[in-house]
Image 1: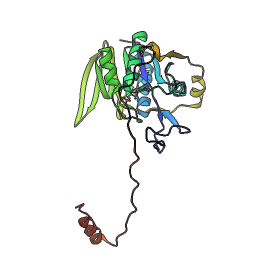
Image 2 (image 1 turned 90 degrees about the horizontal axis):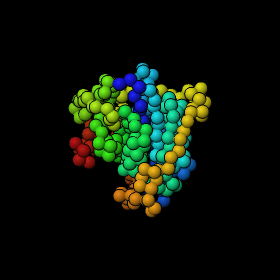
Image 3 (image 1 turned 180 degrees about the vertical axis):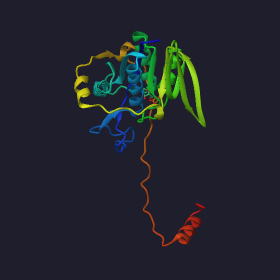
Image 4 (image 1 turned 90 degrees about the vertical axis):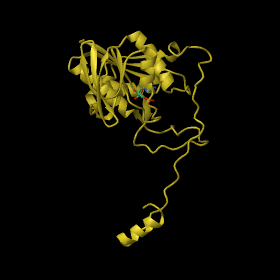
Length: 257
Ligand code: AMP
């Protein structure tokens, strides 16, 4: 099928290079004044969508973020990286958006935009959940190809090579389908300055999450509560030994060997 419509989920996360600190009280992490970026696995998913369009297999790539207003920044980055348009599914400040809420919002939007392919990252590096794609496929009752390292559309189907323990698995899924991107799917491009400028003019639509998340008042309560976060204990200082026999003796004494 030529001219696939591709929906790509892009999540705003704390930048991978930031040293994450637990917030006072231990109920979360510090986010104020901390650099945020587009989740790296979402960049790979987006790159794949853009490449499909560049080789004529896809007609349109729509980037979607579920979150607060600041996620518009993330969507502008996605537009600079090649998405044709963006959709922010906006939640209110402080609303919990976990995989269940993100998947429900994406499923609602998929019902409206009728994509042939939904491309997500295999995981978000903030929560490491690796659940949204699987939940979304279940909610839509679409086939899923997770941990994809190669994607080849074939008419009404898509052939997907998956990274599985101990090797590779190849699946053929009937469209529409949900795919999640693994690290080796591609190497994402950088946003060039001209493309960053062009992105400012690309369409970015904002829809209220309440349209997809039940809309009730009060909203559906989250099913998962983070009870506590703790930083790992600080590393103890190292010790120097004079030679290899002394090192082996220390290792034996400490029960390491
Ligand atoms: P997770 O299941 O949280 O590890 O996230 C896996 C993938 O789901 C991410 O790489 C995104 O592609 C997508 N996703 C998760 N949360 C959101 C969100 N709030 N907005 C858009 N996409 C999301």
